[in-house]
Length: 308
Image (cartoon, rainbow, N blue to C red):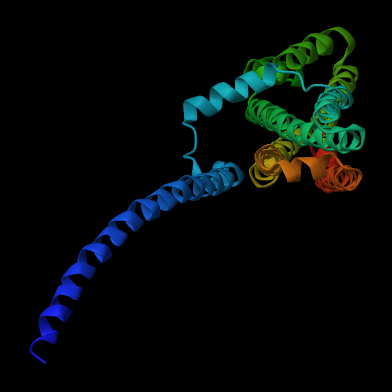
């Protein structure tokens, strides 16, 4: 028995290096496998984080300063809203051309429809900003007119004093209102002012000014009512912009993330790219693009009517 023990110990001693060698040999392979797997996991995590950031950036980032808000509002007063049809056509043509070159004709149709819808979504945001700026100008002018209506001797004098309070896009029409009131009469100037601006608040102001020009009593109170209406319209425009129009870029970001994911899959995996170029793949991409366009248009259609 004692003779067998040294042999067993020797066998164990011989086996220990082999086990150590096997472990040492296996460690690099495990490390290599982990290193190979880490980039894909990191890329997946970074991609998911970027997608979430793109979808929620407007609520996550801190708001701009008051000076930045005023500067942006002044720029929006001077900026013209692009023609929706022309902008959508250009965006759709560009997206369709890229789809036709990269994949094929059927996906190009879906890409064109989705691109046009995304351009429409961005135009809703631009038009909403312009509407907020115009409502702010109108509220400021109505406030000045209501203040002057209680101290001015005549309606012409009230308009003359209130005109400098108008700013932005309303400064010119307010000055013309004063000039036309002196040249053609208050009623005619008010009607032209309403036609020139074309908003519900401008028509209320025109009615108040016309009543004052005809010698109607209590027009100062009506001017205050018009001021309250203009303030309410400004609050409504601002609420719509914060809750609806400001979120339109998130729709475009969602489409961009989906397109980027599909493009990355097609470039990194040859079989996926081949399937995208096949007849079935092109049909699926066409239907997907048309569905995107339909969903975005369903959201943008009522929003566009409100901001226009």
